[in-house]
Image (tube, rainbow, N blue to C red; front, side, top):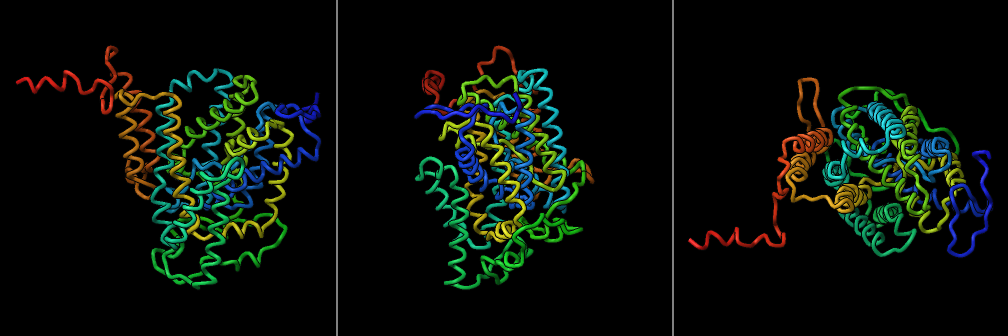
Length: 483
């Protein structure tokens, strides 16, 4: 049977559609459109925050998805949207004077590493990876990636208009909590639209605002919240532009800059190490998503786990090779499958084709670039915190015991190092080589955990903190009162 042949089914109420099956093409197209909407918000918000081209990111997400489906032989239904795990590394690269080509070069190397890990998993299984990166470590790194970005939300985006940022944040919170089903899953996207509209109305009612913007070099300037000059000048159809030569961070580069387009990556070991820890997050994310799909489809997907991880890595390499953004399997699209019970890979091919076509609309890209910084501020307050708390979710789901000093101490030290350094301060290794917050924190967590395992006595009771532990206030604490 051809890889592009699906069994056509007409399921009854509550019946699922398997990956090798499909509905009629009309219904499959409708499901595919839902997947586009689901991935749409995050897939163009993250490139915007990383200073990459949204049109190109959308287009390459479609191409990467097709590659992924071919690599997993249509056995893992999934969409590869833009990964948030590299946002901190990108911010750190710009803070050190790097440009978009430095960002995509570092991401490309990370994609190669992830692909090689996928090949290793395919032949050796997941046991060794789980031993090197247990849940306590992966959770700590994921938390570090999210919380390390806090200063970007509060000092880069919010100062443009604090009130618009807070209104956008509130809208995202209310929609994420109050809306049910599919709408709740795209609350970030809906919040962006809300903030965009509120900013436009504020311009009409109050006029220009005087504030610091990401591109004003720390100076308060008078500006409209929404400026569509570039939108009006953009074509309806066309390929993304080429990145302006010499565009680097220390020349005032800002996320969403309109001169960013397709470009060849450039490579620097310093910048590569700034983003490499994101591979750990991507690995944890991919494995978790494949297991989630396996649970929903009731099919053992462990034999294709390595293919899925390698497919994501190869998708990232392909996307970043032309200046696109990194890819990852998307929880939003897994949510659509859970809601519809349609697991057909045919719907993902439809979504991929739509995304590729959408990437050929330059006017859309300029609308994205015109997103007010304050709106991004409100969204990132929620988004970065959610990324960080995914680490806590990994800990909780795997019953990580933080009463044990082996778990507690290295993670505690790594988190404070990484969050404290943020995206604009660096740990000096030498005059020419420094480590960013995420890289430094990750090294402390990974190396510290395994060193702790080596020196921990085998008969240790594993308790360092006993706050709130039943029996903590017993005879040991009562003893001094007898004297």
